[in-house]
Image 1 (cartoon, rainbow, N blue to C red):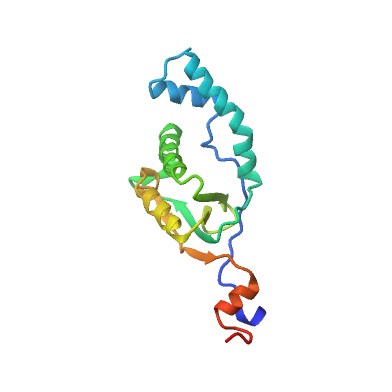
Image 2: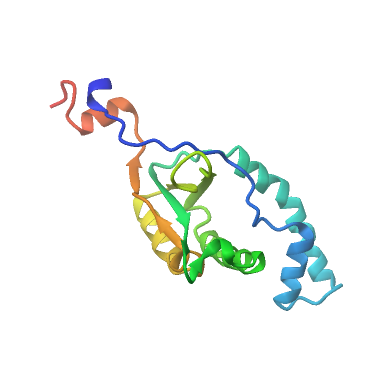
Length: 183
């Protein structure tokens, strides 16, 4: 494949657990702010369920399982530092609220799209890398479009170039591109 494939881009980054992942105590407070009754059995059950999911969610962030889905997309991004739109001058609580909204938008695509967010801060020109896998390319378009309307993206995000691909075996790709004797 060497002469047929030319690398066009690389991105150096690391996986980490986001500072916006709520602790069980923070999750409890958020639920109370959203109307759950303090001390209720329903609230306690929601927090207990979150606490059981949290180790798995954090493990997935650090050592993700790459789904066997064929459509992929990668793009780098930054948070803005412009006057009036500086993400880093906002209080943590405001940033956390926006990231929670952003996460809820993404959850609507569970089972259709999987993501990996990596950190390039100090390693790259871009702060984060977003990798998406989907069951079909339309889901990639749909999730990116929907999430662009979240305040965290609409007001504070800057996006780099998008790289999309379709996963297939090398022989299948060569045949599809009519390279190497295929007719």
